[in-house]
Amino acid sequence: MTELLRGLPPLLASHFVLVTVALGVAIVVGIPLAIAVADRPRLAFPIVTVAGVIQTVPALALLALMVPLVAETRGLGLGVSSFGFPPAVIALALYAVLPILRNAITGLRGVDPAVLEAARGMGMSRHQVLRQVQLPLAAPVIAAGIRTAAVWTVGAATLATPVGQACLGNYIFAGLQTRNWSMLLVGVAASAALAIVLDAILAGVEHALSARGSRRRGIVASATAALVVALVILGLPHVVVPRVSVAPVTAATRSERAGITKIRIGAKTFTEQYILAEVMRVRLEQAGIAVEVAGSLGSSVVFDALRAGDIDAYADYSGTIWVNHMHRPYGASRWQILAEVEAWLAREHHIRSLGSLGFENAYALAMRRDAADRMHVRAIGDLAPHARSLSIGGDYEWFGRGEWFAVQRAYDLHFARTSTFDPTLLYDAVARGEVDVISAFSSDGRIAGNDLVTLADTAHALPPYDAMILLAARVADDPRVECALAPLRGSITIERMRQANLMVDRAAGKSSPADAARWLLRGLPMRDCQD
Image 1 (cartoon, helix red, strand yellow):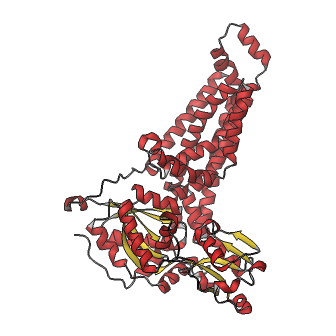
Image 2 (cartoon, rainbow, N blue to C red; image 1 turned 120 degrees about the horizontal axis):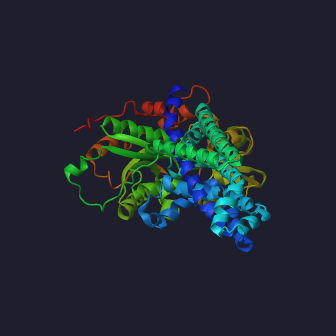
């Protein structure tokens, strides 16, 4: 717990800055827009409707959509990164606009017409009426909308982790995936505390704005703005990560290669990825290279980040690249897929593969052993006569992936029910009988831990998934990086990877991903990569 609390301040600072910047953008957009349309109902209706539609989009989906949008517009024409802070701020600002816009319109329209008429009768211009009458009277209602937006944004910001932004979601995602409930609770509690503190600050502002006297309102508003700006400035070092530009791939000189002093490693949102990221961290730090880990990234986000140079290395799987990025058909042999994937990565994206780590983490259909024995099911094809009375569970991606459709076609499977689970809960669901079959991962230690059996894929509908370390162009030719990571090639067996995963995932006697990584590295050859 002490270690968790020690790592909390940077994440809390990053989360706070992300929320306040997004909220500031939403205010800058929402309030002027409300002023422009408040007395134009025909114009206000479609604008508020669009803001409402954006609000209905799940926050995680909106965050994910911002990554390709920023990338396709070349960083919004400003060259900003499509990974991390910029897409997170844009998505959260869009999410926060609705309550600010709606309350501002309501507040401005709620000013007594007689008061406005009196102001005009005193000779005030339209701008003076707005600034000296309408906005001060509508200020408490506008402040209430900002309070609502702030609380929503604090919660939604925890979902920025998969797009590469450090925040309290790092603890929540990692805690959920590794079943580290202490980590999860720390992240949730910190997020709730931040929401309460921000709401209390804004409640004080709202109360001051409701009070009489422009002097008091001005003092409170100025003090609050100064406090927030100061906190944002203090937190910025935890947020702004310089974008690493990828130069054209040429033969690097010895002095250029020796210049690599820090590497950013990515990891997807499951236990094995956290462990492999720690394995790479240990080896690189032993070689004298500083390491930063960006964890819990979405599958497509982490690949795009490597390609763009926002991260330098991560572990991926040959089948994932073959299916999701190369869009190749099924049926090729394991060695052919691995060779073609590596060639495609080098040719198309200047990404280097260090070869297979020695194990596969392939999709596989799994059942409880007693159920499989009762129905005499040993292969996926044996499910066909029973499928219409069975249910199948999968992770977030499974039922939208090409592998699922390929399995259905190859074996003519039609299940009675499909259910989607977080990967952490997937194995518990089949163990408790909530579903009959799940899409498991072949290197997952919970297969043995829950006494499950994997079903043979006799039709070869599922491609192979060799685990391999990928390097971005910036570090691909660095001799110390190669010295540190190349010995991992072919060194991890499926049995050892399963055991390492189980060390983290089991309920009793849990290990951290860092401890599992150190266990996994025992006995592997070490080199002196300092020179």
